[in-house]
Image 1: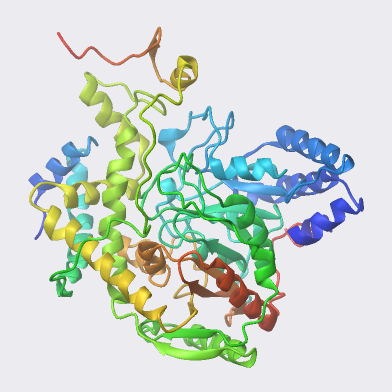
Image 2 (image 1 turned 120 degrees about the vertical axis):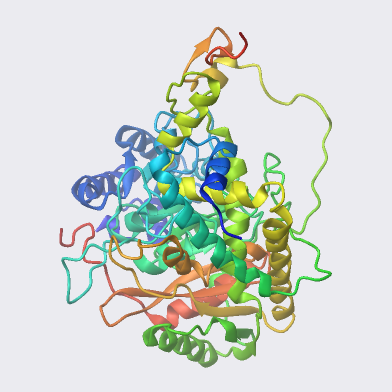
Length: 494
Length: 95
């Protein structure tokens, strides 16, 4: 089936004329029509626009002008501004917002010929780890527990719609954003590859801001090589983002084919957490064995401040969010709720426009930045952040990459972990440090838990050394031979 | 440090989010739960550590101080909930 192809295979098939971009897009639009009413992965499907782009792709292919992604149907997280296409950030407050401009990352994908199927569901303003905070309803994970197929599981978050779409074969790949794990954790929950590149690799221009020093755009895909293809298109210097890195984009596809022989892989002992499920511990050990068998050297390292990463994150991220989300005032764009005066208008607009989790984070951020508390919370968290970066810098003095689990559990049920906010926050314990430090990370599907649910392993690398990250990830992928499929997928059940 | 109801109301005011009286107690509980969990940062010795604002190890670029964009008020105002001519409209601010 066309929906089962990898991007690499689809690219070859299009160029060889085995099928057209219109065929490929139609197959995905059909799959969306069948499965999206149940999965709720897409907030907005753009049938006609996608077919127009597919026809343009076929014309380019016929003219011998194919680019890296010509004719490849992708799903776009609804945090990326898309010109003329509504962009909600999963929030009620942006329900009427139609951006007049295109984000740099999506413009790069369009430049390379990609077809956009639609905008995917997500936790509101990317704040969440289960997609349960979306104003547009939860997303169903296409994977099912073997013994309990009726249970509806979360796809992870915040990029839950993108992950569910790629897992269920509704798109060949997708964009996501990762502020504390929002690409890598849903990739782990949905049996996908998810990449958070180095801070500065992918422009944040036109991506609705959550926490600017932590937000990282990146891709979802079904193979490591597809992740390299997508990131190669998304990345690159952008003068419109003041933190964009003026660095050449290497050939990451080539990196996927290199050997790990001689690479030094670090095992951070602090990632061995109390209460971690035995199967995750076992999978981690298995991953180390695979890399050792492939010729890598395994080295114990220490990242002593790991356990403080989450708490530092939950000061820094809300602080930046409270500042970034100040723009939603009901005046210049977005929804408005009228009030008796301007201040009442602001307060009513923001009360009705933001959901509970967003309101909590804005209030925490406002508090930690307020006079009298700034030093005790915000400044201290920034110092801990410096120590976390130093941990990585020290570790990368000894090793080329680190191997860790991606998440402390497999996908959980909708409604679970909702009792108090911190239980949900703990999902990101292994992913948050890389956001604080800005180092690149990737989640690779590596095995199944006893319920048949996917589990990912995470590879972290030095800043701007995504090449080594892809080399190690591809070696894990080859050794793992992960071929399990989700229950709900195009052409499958459902 | 524990937030009292008056502080919760003050934060809501600073954040410009209307909080109904009935919501104050729940918010107070949730925010205090998060803040007391964050207190673990006090265990870390941060003496002499310079604060880090971001993972990017870069100096910000400079450019000429010239206008590089603009001149399309209809695009800028296209998403405005209310407008009068080329202006955003809000309830009367000055009597």
